[in-house]
Image (cartoon, rainbow, N blue to C red):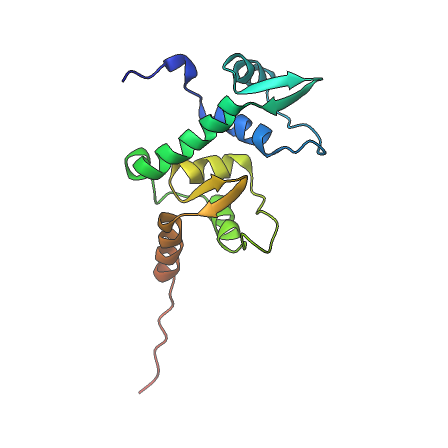
Length: 154
């Protein structure tokens, strides 16, 4: 199956789509680049209602498809798996410490969530960022690499 290159989104465009998807009706509109707004609307992922971008079903499916592809092929898509910035790792920790039932969703920068989703460390389920097994393993590996050995004197 050939990919339709006109429907491929850059990382920045996908981050804009995520920003629009996370904006509720009672909140201020998502601020994204004008060219992203035009392209997302032309692709049918968003619609402009009274100056406000709103998600369409196609846009929601696009995000869901991205999450499923990431979950299936995360190791092939992410050769630089070990190179997280300090801020990205902090965002990963923030999501890992957020209870999905009792707490409000973790709020992390859209660029971090896009990269961490593409790396397979988390997924976006029902507008909540949730950890994957790969993400939990990454945190455990990071913690085990920073263990300080305690030596007792003889």
